[in-house]
Image (cartoon, rainbow, N blue to C red; front, side, top):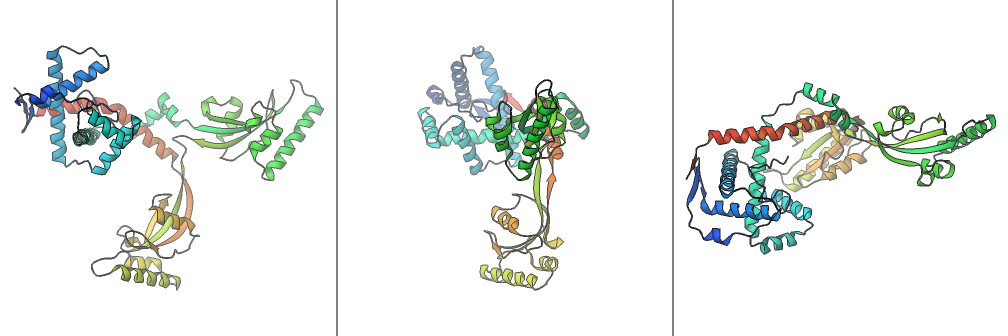
Length: 429
């Protein structure tokens, strides 16, 4: 969640590039203390640099600047608030790793259609240095982190609040499912006679027979549909439930992906619809495998070779009838699953490291894997059961809760910033 506001960070970079030339005049000024903030200080040079950056940005945006007195007060207040947040970040041990900083720089470059090398050149051309630029981005990310963690603790979203949100217009829009639909139309005239109806029925029977033989619905639409989009395979594209013709709405709501409806008649003729796919926050089915896991790691008393020998021995013992549960409790180095005999519970697809997930998906139910080597050690996996689980409603409630939280964040951030300023010792000089 991006918590940038009038107090902070908008002039370093917040996923958009804002390069400014360092004010040479400001750098030459004799440093003096502008403000004391708890045990820290804000220097004249820091103030002059920030003032110059803001003035340049206002000019670039063709925005009328306030009077110098007002602008001076605003800039100093901004620096004080930033300083207080950085003090809190230090007290809380907030640290932005180099890898996270590098990713942020890549996003900044991409959002400005630049490569990293071009971004570095743009920073240099502005009169700044890349080292200073990285420091400013790291500071911005640090403040964002302390804002997010501190403010989120103050926001409570009850299940009742989620229920009310989901019942609202916004909540219903969030929950609405989208459907990708295929369509075949068999035309009828406004007043069909028995012969026309019989001909249409024969055509429907032919389509049904070809579907039963496994023929593709879109190919059948090209061959048999009288609809205007027949040559596009009858694909109606993605439609929200509220955007569906009333004729299709009820059948679609009862269909599973891949289903083809019974013929639906209206004044135009007979319609066949296929539910090609559906999507939305409330639609999410995940594949899960119930699995056992045994891990052997090298350690102070067991070399890598001895670890391999041990996993091979345990593998053979299980094949010979030894109980996986007993061996995992005795030998496994997986602290999470060993106490339960290696039981990993239900594992979502892609929850495990890629190599282990790949091997697990290949196993038949009840089958034991061969020893699998990873960067950490040696593994045995056993597939016990498989299922698909609908997590759509849980995901919908989570998304609703996050939306509510975000709507409250800005107001609560203002309150929090006001509080930390009121609680601080601040002396303007």
